[in-house]
Length: 206
Image (cartoon, rainbow, N blue to C red; front, side, top):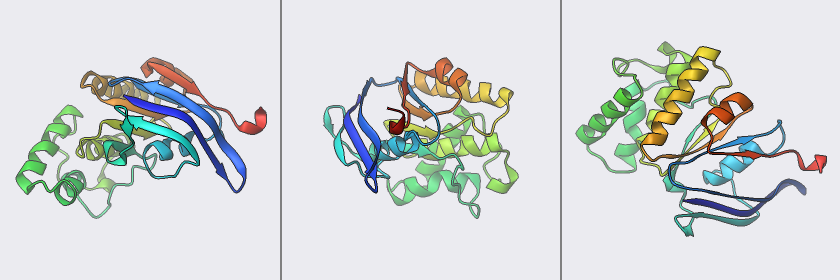
């Protein structure tokens, strides 16, 4: 369970987030919607441990927050261009989780199967479409065994058909018990996948 309590954040004296609170049960999906400048990405970065909060509390299973339990899929995917698909997925498990090459490869193959990307193991990011890069970015995040997976605008560059594919993929991951937090401008997509929708707006709007 993810609990966020009275989260606040300001930059240069300007409040971006004020008293944000929500509770997300294991396996649930939260979508965060709102206009640009409302603090959606800042909230996601704080949950992921990439940005500090000014005040408030984040708990996972009732304990102090551990950013190692949170994976992130960035809007631009952040794949390593000089590494193959397989190397992109297995690098962190080998370096951080100390997996053997065989263990990391086996788990990566299972993730590629789950995400319908088998056959692309030896390709490089430049050889993949936007939708394929996104699946590899998700596989790379899942390879670290996160309890919570965060996405920054996962449908922003995708056509309607691919958006439907992303919906299906996210709902399939939900079946595995994965908790997911998604920033999106796409209200239809947000409502289609979410157990909860959190609406944020710029604080200057009151």
